[in-house]
Length: 204
Image (cartoon, rainbow, N blue to C red; front, side, top):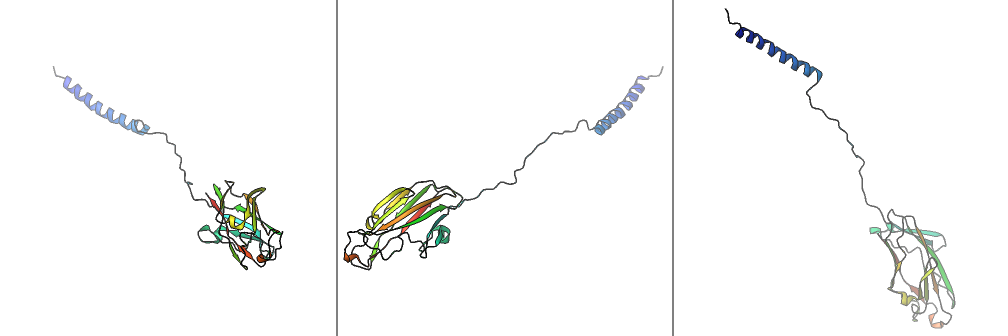
């Protein structure tokens, strides 16, 4: 009798290989066995940052009485000198007992608040006479309705005042400066004048 077991085994092997190959082809065609995942993402493409600005503006009467505006950016380094607004009024014909009041407005026209606000007075210099005009003429300064100084121009010299802060962007603050000539002055003060700088400063 012929041995058919080897023949059957060979036949089985012939069927197994094609069957496996066929299955792989079917799975591949169905996409089964491939790797995949859900994804989600957000891109922020508008990320920006920058520096704000601190700008002081002063408005007040000029020599002709018309309103004048000075801005800190008018000068180098955001520090300007404004000679067109005379806070002592510019009256060179004052008489004993007379006063001259000037109102100015300080504004923050920048984009950041000023955390501190100061007013500093410089040295007073007198001219036109041998009398001590700086020690005689009086100065009063008010922040809105609050008086922050009252005394002679000589005593005001080199003083510094911390004003109410912060000063927010867009905020405006009125100040009045009144210069007076006491009734008790004598003839030795005739023709005398004073000159004194006042400096406003914001700091952020």
